[in-house]
Length: 380
Ligand code: MG
Image (cartoon, rainbow, N blue to C red; front, side, top):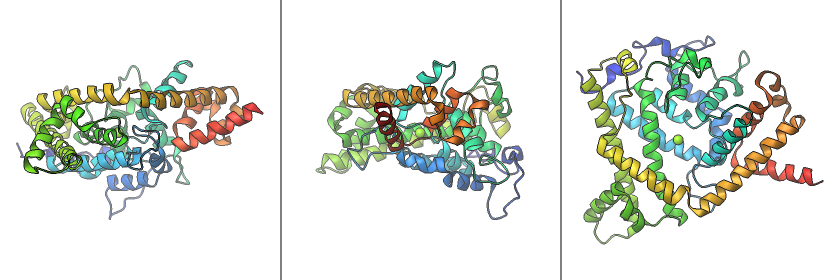
């Protein structure tokens, strides 16, 4: 058994199938297939729109709150270092981190919930991973010969499977993505890198917003309390806000190191030595240890109870849900008011799905502008 998991990594010789594209594309000797996918995503319009989408805070009361774009960059950092430490394919891990939130609608999870509720009334659902696949396969138009970004199978599979499993019975349209098998480790680490990024960032932004207090966090979040005690001991007499920053960095490192060590241990214990064995293993191998997992869950509950559902954010969420829901109903009843490129899609996709696609692509500021304009039109 090697000291890392390079034998389980997606690489050219290990699994060429994952480098295949729907439309033939000439090789570029200077760049690997996943490096080319990374560039295709960076240049996508949907990627640029992440800068204008809420991560947690919709109001711009601070210039320092994370957007979906800056959150994405933080996930890339973590995913790359985990991939490097485990000997995985860093280009694939980076590309999957880059694209992991591209399917999120405006207004964060409140927008996603609202869009899902709207679609349920039409017998449909909204799922940001499946929407991300629609973006890269259909909505992005950069090539003369075909729609979509023509990404490799490995990246498209990772887009769908990085955070959950889909059953072949329920999602027959995804049958080309090896639904009965686990995704490669490069995809498995993305969801956990995402967790590490937001568990750190949401405490930081929560304190920045004034909705969380450092002492309160220390009293209720064990992992942060332990990290804070350690940095306090190392830097006595330093102001609390600097100690808090140090503690957040330490917490991110502790969780990242735990993910690396536990994933390696799981693979060794299972005797997994190849990508094929990663795929065939009954469970995902990328994981936190039991103590880190318990701390993760404790912090997540704290963030949910104290921050995500606090009155100030609940008011933002209600407003966001109202905007999404009213606009959805407006375009469903007045489809001629949709942009012509969306009207053309109604025949094949159905009206409700097309309206959801249009809304899901919007940034926070664009949807608020649309809302104000349509309210004015209705009043006339
Ligand atoms: Mg994310």
